[in-house]
Image (tube, rainbow, N blue to C red; front, side):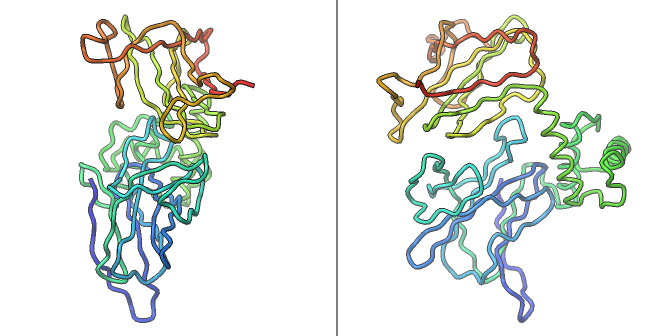
Length: 327
């Protein structure tokens, strides 16, 4: 859900600005787009912590179109939330400034659909919200609760309320991080929690790395009880690593499939070899994003049959799948 909020009164002599406010329980990263002298430029990323606002443009806004795209940072299991619209513009994996952003010109760039923003005053802000409807203080606390849970603390639930379990967990973390004097919802505490979660994640779960020059779409399969559950598609940009599974693996087996595509969306070819990483285990997939819990009758359910490769984990709780080009 996206709330577009109106003008903010600007004191005389103060510089107007465009701000992005995060009223969700997730850490977000945002990118903006604006046009000057006929050139449309996108830039990012702006990290926006839960319950806080970030100035994205320090200028008087004119009565014309600006653009915004935002998503949860890669810390979370998948890109859980995306705030997007209908204008297709270029972004990149790391911090970027792209002029002529209507057309991507670099392998590291990809298209995302931006929201069109039409400010009515020189000072404007956009609030990004979720269905729960948190106010900023609640969003900040819910964001802390989510990170504490990901860091291994038992906080009881994510509700934006600083109850006893949340306070004990937060105080314990702040003491261990040497942040006893910091504000509970300060950027220092958030950033320390983000670092702690990232460190914990490197010790478990599944990472997929794309070491090619092409965009790779990947899917995975896992045993859960007697069934194999397949999930996809995971978008992995050139030179990027994603972590679709952050919990410890079962140490037994995992299934994977990947294919690289060129600028036209066709299977990429290198030295006459199609860049497809497959195997002999036939599991169900779908053309769009999917989670498929049974593998019995793929075609009967309107699904596709895809040849996955089986990876023996040998007891490992973490694993990295690397997609590379043939030499």
